[in-house]
Length: 572
Image (cartoon, rainbow, N blue to C red; front, side, top):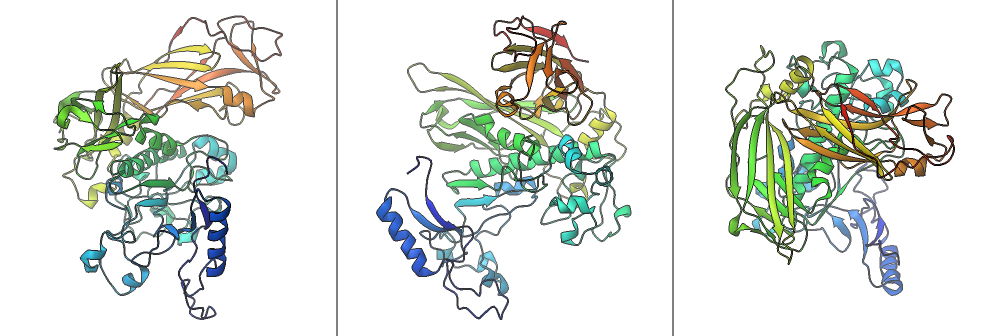
């Protein structure tokens, strides 16, 4: 068998319970016979055991809730949810559902979780330990939208709380065709995109006409807010499950990371291989692949340290700092780690919770609407491994938080409006950038040298200087993106061009006489550029220099010299 094969499945979302077949008279989807039929299911199980014997056969990905759940026949009693949730809900057990779970029959009988007998509440069928599918809304970047939506459709971008026609909404037909999924929460009418709108809005769910609904000021603002909303949503999703790993959960599968066609439904990177805010939110929630993670529970503001390797770590405390959006340090402190150690393959739930660092100073942007303050919290951990070398390491995490004592629904619609004001009213941040080109790609160092602003959602991309079509070079693999840079902070990002060389065989690189990298093979040769953008960033594009001679002729692919000196560029 293949080494990556974990288990054999009979199918997805099958009805493995025996049901009386009424010929479809009732119209109830549960009124069907077992799928697959019992004899086929038992035959598959038998032959796989005989022919393999090392991996299990499990009939279905999920089946049903309650005491009828059989872990030998399904991975989970339920899948989902698949829509937007309040970020703090991901820190509840089985977010989006009741705890313990209720079956459809129990819901029909108006049962509540408290009605479930105590001896059943912790049974495998009452709580989802292996989350076989969970996901949320998805939204490609604006450059991708321009490739599959008409101009008319782009100008008719969704209003606040607007739903697709499939949900009795009035959204443009092209958005509906490409499976647009509303960014409004499943349990309320709070639109996660329009939370960034400034001036803020108060949305009445009874409003039916499109022209009466407010919406973001432009398709550019709408798209950026969609990326930010996805970032926060998927970051919380990943962190909510990982902070209770090995306790509430054994695994979680995301539905889905990519799509077989241009779509708005369930994708962290799109049909054109461009990542979106959801991808970078999930990656941030996973600490960029680092084995040590810090998580803030958004429900109770407790801090959790996660160690995913078997080695015990030595660490004294988690340091935290709170900044206003204009870069003022408001408060700081430390949360001690019990016994100054983090065991291998464990989660340490630290005692106490972060305080709200209220900002009493005057708002850095005009705020006649009295929108909520937003404080940027940074968590930092320094640790060393319990090995002969005491190998050191660090972990960090960043959160955009509002006052937890404000629970009124009136403020939910405008929770991130101050970030909207920052984008609309505040002076843009000019980042300083340095890059070094090598055989494996480009090493870019970014610094927020300004002391009066946090750099929010900093986005890098490799682009072509041509003004025709999508300028992005796809795919470009980056080590980090959609970053937050505090005042004075520096971040280093690797941009890999290896994937471009593999997937765009017709593309050729050349060093022009003026010393810059040229992209050949198109109607007009264009320059290779580094694009720097962001929520409140002054957008810039920098030409990439060869900084050395190329081998071969001008039509030959160039391998930039890895001994090249670093080049300093002031981006403005």
